[in-house]
Image 1 (cartoon, rainbow, N blue to C red):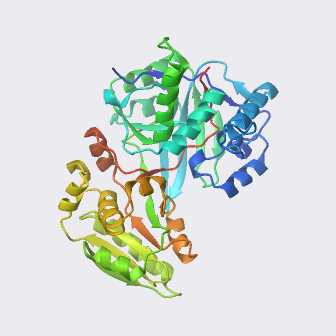
Image 2: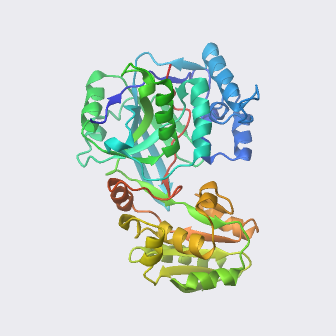
Image 3: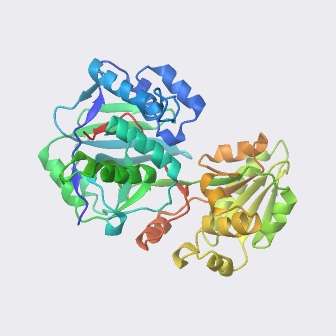
Length: 433
């Protein structure tokens, strides 16, 4: 089998009735309660009212979030706020942003692809998922019969055939800048020639799920739930965003935050069993300067050996941790496959979090006493504000490692990576009925 691409019978916002800036939202899993309230206040048509309605998840409650999303979805269709495009289309997305003073552009396209079981090895996962989010997304899909957000897939094409075929002089279908300053330019592609090229380029590719593992597995579960005998039934496909590995792909780490009490110097002694430790002492005046040196040191050292950072409550030091000991015996004890033994998160989870601190696998999966935080600033702020005991600051993941692990049929720990920038919700809806 191959990757099968189809255009979307797209439902989009009617830009004659709304301003896209008022209605776009990030993916549901990065929206806090406060931010949800802020998005809802911008417009009664903000997309958050579909992907994360501010209601309970209790199915016995008549006003649960899934029923609320269904009511909003169909009301907006009736009002003409949401409309169907004239023809099925593929949406080409360009994201322009700046990071560390460097201007970066990421290009990709949004289409439907046939849902593949992982056993085919055509679409590869790289992270483990958690049951709660999948149940939540499945309930939403069952009620609304639509994909509201995309799965994020990456493929490799050094020739950049699709990127070179796009007419960048055409008028954008959407041009909107999100709250993080990322400009999202969208072109609507409905001509057969370009669509056929996209289908052909992807036909012999292997795709890696970069982000949206829960969404992809939800699509698999919904396909199985509907169990249609029609091989072209819409439920056999899922809406995905595809980007080329050869493009600018920025991957952030997901940091590990301990919220269960641990005495700082007890933790430090446990860490020193395995890691060489370099202190970065700061005071009130030079903290930011020292922090910048500390973060750079993590990146520099991680090129040569497993390295990470540690920041603890009520301690005016950052600690650079460089793995000293061969920990293969411990990793073997936890039955870690060889391909994962060189991964910093695996070493941290098995040596410190599991063996030394006694967190069970269930506690780690449920984020009980430990949190997985994408935003670097938040990982530091939680210590400064006393909301957490210790933050392990991880180095930036390497796409080569992710690819190597996936191709070996293994997965990284849950919440290992954060592909930046996130994809906007509200660009397009893929109906499944």
